[in-house]
Image 1 (cartoon, rainbow, N blue to C red):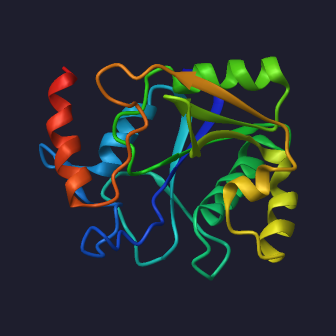
Image 2: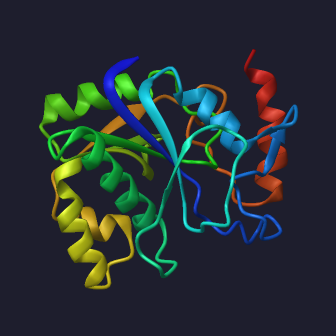
Length: 204
């Protein structure tokens, strides 16, 4: 576990292709939800874990702090990243970092936090993104807390895509090998969900 570290699980998506029920409490396997699955992947890597949602109607049986979006419109993942940076500043100050992962990535690697921190310190970057099979995963990253104000400005200017916002930042990437399955495989619909359930046989 990384001392004095923070991870936010982003769970604000509507889940429109999962019957509109959202992904927060979507059943994954063995009566566990996607949130529980992702939490179990990160809980031993970070000192503190919280979950971000975009509605105060959302709830979870896990005893995690719930962090709400501070932008009222449904502006996509940047709202969750902003909420994560707000909590990061509150808990660790502007010189700290916050790791952001989405609730629909059930196979996150056990060395995510360690490798992210090593990368961001080595490259002196403002954000590091996960990459696998030469594909960047912009919703899985470690962000420096002091870019919160830049993000607020960009959102208010109409920026909605992560890559558009980070184009002016110092970005680095951490590459993972795909062994049997992609550690950043994400679930968008029932087909993805059923496929992921079958993939769990690779993990004991």
